[in-house]
Image (tube, rainbow, N blue to C red; front, top):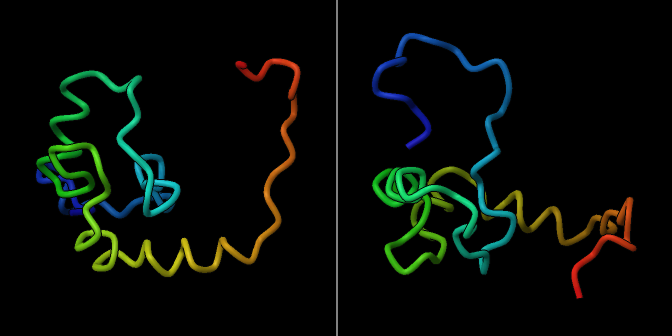
Amino acid sequence: NGVRRSHKHLTPIGPGTEFMPETPDATMPAYLTDVQKEMLISNGTYREDGTVNMETAKRLGWDKVWEKSKNVAPRKEVFPELKRK
């Protein structure tokens, strides 16, 4: 996980955390396409039931990122009036 099979020789410009679950109890985003969901299951990010694959999370250090983020104040909502009720 973390390496694209067709781009093994490339070095990433950024950390590439777009598909990293935000928390250990996150579920796979419903807005993803079926193909994207299949890729995230096949690469070990999520399990077939949509829960986070904790083995992958530990291997990639996401558990440490989540632990650190517990100590950070939550972000303020920019447009709270747009929040769905």
